[in-house]
Picture (cartoon, rainbow, N blue to C red):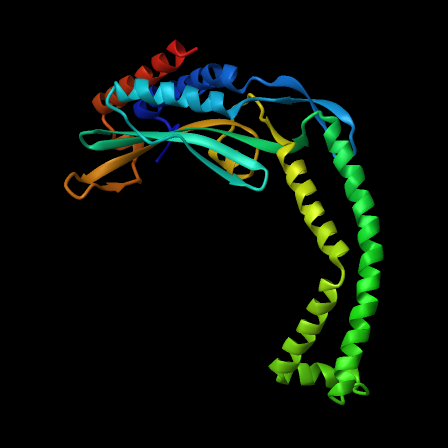
Length: 288
């Protein structure tokens, strides 16, 4: 059962305000780690722009500090983990603790976008210009190669008596005759060998793209706002924390039941759980 709870009663009244305190304390504590700094970056067309970013390494360090403090309070915790889908990234860690008949699991995460830019370096524009020139050269060479390859393939087809076949008939022949396909491929490859300029261009293009890749950098952007699990799943930027409460059905097998009727949680247990959660609030506040 996800906290905060829904419904009237002592358990809800006791636990829900503590969860809200955790959320607010977490947002305040993580803010320095996700504070955006202004930096200069270059676009693909050479335009220099000013944008904002934060360092995810600072978030990792923050999580490690919190996890260590929680561990000293007997909370089991996971390693700081990450996930990404396209430009959407997530850093998070989880904690858990058994309380005789109850099990609490907590999640702390931040969701952000990673946007690619180039470093501010005149070499970016030099490479772009050279790539443009190479594209023009490649067009000329490729045209020459295509003409030579067409001629070589036509001669090969004439030798085999296929010169007058319609395209569909030739396609069927090639589909049925693997040797014919290999021979035509060999002819085309032989033609390419006669154009060393094409190989040079292709190799140079690879080198330049490798250089461009080295000049690429990612800037990270998020919003210093609390988002719930649903908004997180929808891909919104922000920080999120939530806790799940389960009943331990069998201590040996660790079988747990996520369905809990808040009305059946005694006031004594509501107080115990609240006190453990209040300790997390203090840990978060001390980390700021």
